[in-house]
Length: 266
Image (cartoon, rainbow, N blue to C red; front, side, top):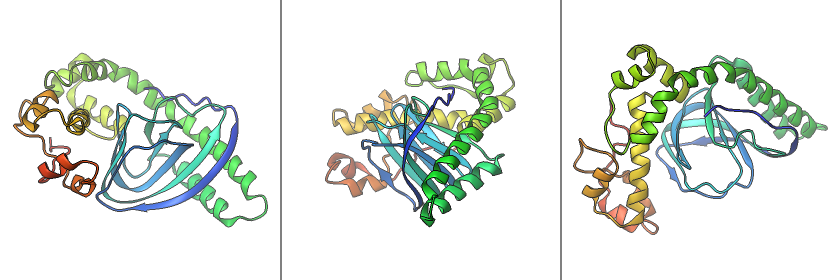
């Protein structure tokens, strides 16, 4: 998806907060009453939002639109720290959730820190200064999207193929690179720059997300879920061990949980 920033007016900043999260944790979906803009200073997480698989790493910004997503699960792979901005606006920043890599933009990191310090200071005029800072954040994000958007067009043929066929067959790196008319090394570098993970890890994330839906439906045995989720190489889908903490909500999953391999190493 190409990010388009179409906000015309910030109606209200609800809260600016700083969070520290530990590993591992899976939070289940809920209604989002406000738009959320999150700068990740450290840590690594995989976010399953609607039909998207998003990877957050240091110096990435995650945007979640207001609404009721079909799915909102967050898997924290390691401890991390982030600053969250909850806000209302005339229109969402984007119709879909996204993560953008801003490792080259020290200005954005500084702006998020400044808006947090301004917000918690509660000094006279803090709210209006915070609104001004949020507009500056949007402006810097808009500048940063031009290059990734052009790159996304280059690998669009591969993404179309992946999302169309990931449950039907496996893909090789050479096949995905060839359809985009580029070398394997360059294709993999470009893909990881945009999505934060390798192409094969991205595909595996889609399969895991689909497998989780089938597991929660409680309609299929595990060996069938493996096949239905496109795992031709595996006889069993391993479910995260920490699902056992959700025993009240997912009793069948907790019985089967022995460990997990969310993203096999490629």
